[in-house]
Image 1 (tube, rainbow over the protein chains, first blue to last red):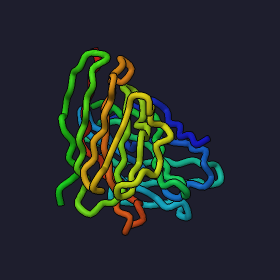
Image 2: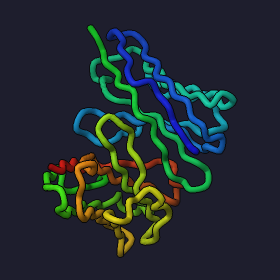
Image 3: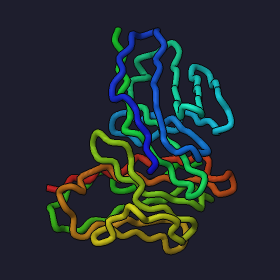
Image 4: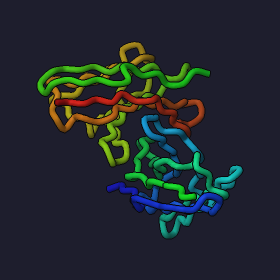
Length: 111
Length: 115
């Protein structure tokens, strides 16, 4: 069945780049997403990439997609304290249009 | 443009009681989703509506959970009777069919504690 996997934690120094990785199993995924969740808040859509693309850049965010390996990554340049949150990778399958989430990666920033 | 509205924000109930959550999607969004997010996990889809019809309810525990979207706009999710393991955040989201349901926008969620 469909599955999305992420590492649980990532710690980076303020000003460095953060790279959050994700793998998925559904080869028919049409869109892949990155959502951000801050404490006590809902999910904020950060960015998404269509499955026929391999890269998308949006200001400090760069998404890389390796469709062959079913690997997705989110790079945050110049990481700031405000980037502390849980980041969820998600995929949408082509048939049902439902979105399936990973367990999230908690990003912490150290001074 | 107003976002997805949910209420209440917090609810504490005893096990075996019933509870209902309300969601108002973004205006014009025909697709509405209810997700359950247990602490430390990613959101899990409970039910998806398109207008007032159910698209997917395969992971909804139908013996105790029910949801409706009678007029194709607002939706309610009910749990009756609640169990301890229902403690979670219940997230509502909506998306636009006209945009291919590409982007789903989430509300703040309702945090349910069952004691």
